[in-house]
Image 1: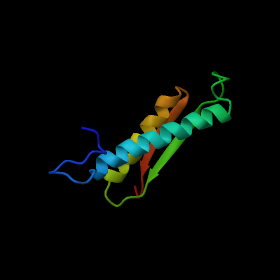
Image 2 (image 1 turned 90 degrees about the vertical axis):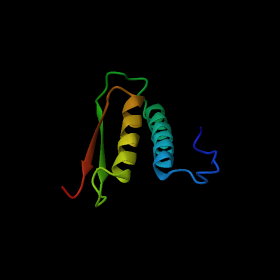
Image 3 (image 1 turned 135 degrees about the vertical axis):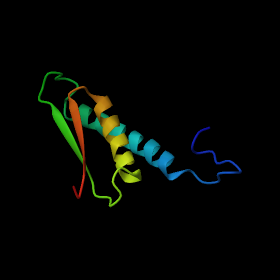
Image 4 (image 1 turned 60 degrees about the horizontal axis):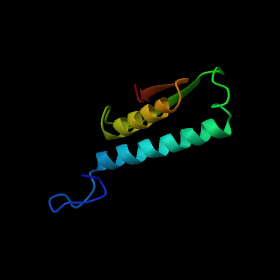
Length: 91
């Protein structure tokens, strides 16, 4: 069932489903725009790009970190030169 069609038992979209879906779409779109505007697609052997995701939630490994990880995974899927790292702060 698509997340935008609520059911009788679940009238609202679950927060985790929304974060995963919207975050992945937003990052994929932003990375696609970045690769096109920066000319990354035209120069496949240029310098690698690293994206650092910093999560400052007091609950390590929970919803915020999962949403950020989903965004980082989407960014990494755009171009093989993109590497990602998730840092949960405070350490």
